Amino acid sequence: MLSRTADHLFWMSRYTERAENTARLLDVNYQTSLLPQSAARAQDGWRGLLSISELRPSYAAHYGDVITPRDVMDFMVKDEKNPSSIVSCLRNARENGRAVRGALTTEVWETQNQTYLEVVRMLRNGDFERDPGQFFEWVKFRSHLSRGVALGTMLQDEAFHFLRMGTFLERADNTARLVDVKFHASQSDFDGIFPSKAQEVDFYHWSAILRSVSGFEVYRKVYRDVIKPERVAELLILRPDMPRSMLGCLNEVMTTLAMVTSDPASETLRRAGKLRADLQYARIDEILATGLHAFLTQFLDRVNELGAHISREFLMPAAH
Image 1 (cartoon, rainbow, N blue to C red):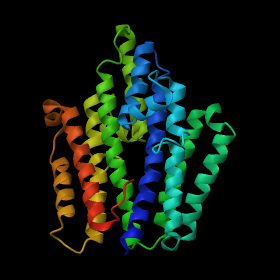
Image 2: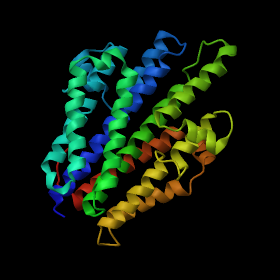
Image 3: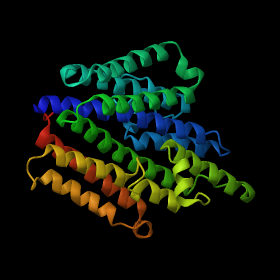
């Protein structure tokens, strides 16, 4: 396959996944902001959301130093000057799909095209302002639809594998960012709340985080217990059967890499395998004892390095 084609397919799926994950992050922050907490804590939540996506400098350049929920949501949903906003991601996904229209089935292309045209219409009509929660659900649904249509209609050749690779590499990155920021926030989010209310608020906080990765029912099925932070971390980091866990994503990346590489000694394959193995044989108590933040920061660095190696070996050397 031409590296140019592989590059467009890889980034089409990454941008679609990024739009979904941005919707998930905004949705969980929107829901948790409705819980009882001080104004300072609520603002910390929105500040943390910008930090997850490394967008604080860009936000400050356009909106100033004051962080408000409305400005953050506008910036991350419909600001076309922000390359990571939902509308920008869906536009970039569509443009990458258009560039390799011949490598996609009609159904896959029409799904991408319709998603972008529809999101533009919805934002113009004020649907997002009327009901942010419903808008975020729609973005998640369109991402699910895109993956499902690709799985159901595309030949499972190299084009399909690069689509899958982009999806799961992006998802691993976003899950790590969510866990890092939300666990850090949880250490101080509930200061000043009456003890009788603390446990209740704590439950809703972790429930919202699990729902943001469609993991609430999964948690109940796996653990059959009250929601505990260390088990939330285990589910989102180390469970191979959890679709959005870091290990689950790395398993998928390894599978697709093995399908497209012709060199068993590939440095890209070696790095992916080592990263996967470090997750596969880790224990959550060891991770928490040595420091969750340090573990996740290192993981994000290694995922970015892996993405750079994939680009050098298979894709066009272009900045995204």
